[in-house]
Length: 419
Image (tube, rainbow, N blue to C red):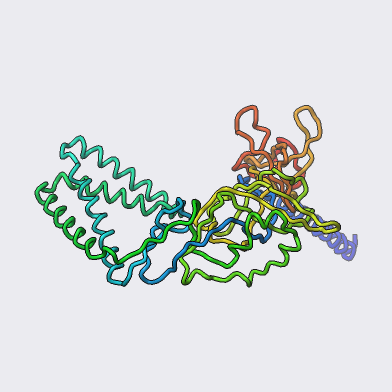
């Protein structure tokens, strides 16, 4: 064999080896890419609540009676927004001058201190009562803390007063009863003297009706009444102008909402009212109110040929925030659904134990994919709310909170090792 032929043979052999190495590298790259592409992407199943609702702006209709009398710098308010009052009950006291008002405020402070001292003097000094009171104080502190952390401000003042009362009574066992009696006598004498000073220097403004008090006067008290609502139309609603609402509270004491039932009228597209009729129970969600307000459909009035209708809702719940509202945006909640949120992209068609096709999702448990059926409760734009499983043996085929839902993966099958 010539030298030239030998060199040619070596060159061919080298090319074959290089080609084999190249193919091996390509094969390894393909395997790595496939392995990477086969790593499933998952999300954690969480329990959520979705509302079937629509938003609108509506107007409150109520029977309201203006309170006689004016507000000034020498007026002492006795009731607050949203507080229930009886006819002829005192709403406020008007004093003739600032000195009389100041004396009245001091009397209120003294009455509070006298009440606490009376309570303290009633406390027994034996250890069993002290231990019982310690437990009451701990309970009261826990209750007050829970309210504050939860953002519940109504009733906090009363809770704080009860806690102060308990603390003073608890410490009374270490105080000399003679000292307590002397302090009580001093405070009582001071209070009685102030009361004599303000005799004849005040007048009382009484409630004109039974109902709920509101300091806000907006100029619509005589217009948006329950009587006016009887013939109210969609055109009437559209003619209302929010800019007409005026704050007339300055110079006026307030008003009493004399009807315990109120109404909320709004315009709604017919498409949003499907399935809603008179008597249907709904909920209203206002931005300023902590909890949803239960309402009932009072009437639905649709003009001929209109794509909208006048929806009139009635309610009985009253809060300090509600009594001050007139024109208000709200979310009308038809129904709520609580379950597991599932992206639509994760939903597949699998089979149950009997081999029947079922809609469901695959979850990742360790390195194995498992198929779980879903029972759709509510459909959103790109997700479903599905029934949550209990986690019990007979309910293991349903999703539970904490499951790892596979939203992207290849070659998924029930009980298949995928990585």
